[in-house]
Image 1 (tube, rainbow, N blue to C red):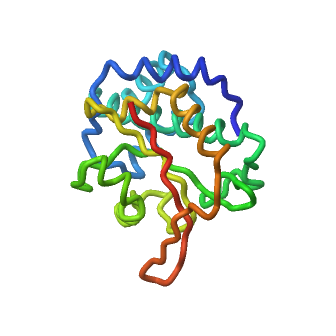
Image 2: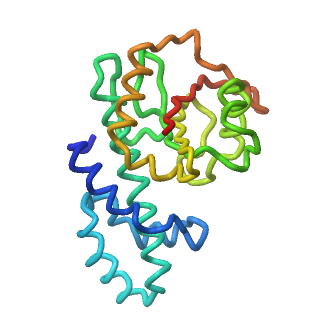
Image 3: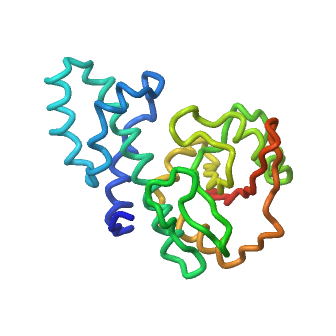
Length: 214
């Protein structure tokens, strides 16, 4: 697990908020390869010269690369921070294999990966309905998850961010709020409250939603 200073990282992530959240293209392996420097780049300013190098080398559209890079960087470091928050808690043990894409940590010996996701407008139900029907939303999230490398039907904790003004994605930078809600969930963790899902292939998973609203 990378060494993380949450206050410093929160400050860096907030620098991304001044730009609209636009991808410009579907995430794909080619553009992921162009922008893999995001994994080792913690600061906003350090992204700029690396983007310039890639632009020159591959003759890409500047705006397209900028949008793609800052979104990947933002999502990766927010997720890394959330994993750090979990694994810093005494009830949580990090995965023994950091390359295990199915397990980030265990809580009371139950393995989970985690995913921070914005409240999906495609769900077409309001927040009040979703909170009362968590299992329906969880099933929807599994069915509609990304087909990228973290796609799976194993145990997952969804950290679901909802902003009353509709800018849900900005809460991924609010590490202080994320930390508060994760700590609250883990301190009150009850395995009997996990949702048990059975999928079309008869595989099963345990899941829950940690709501982060503002």
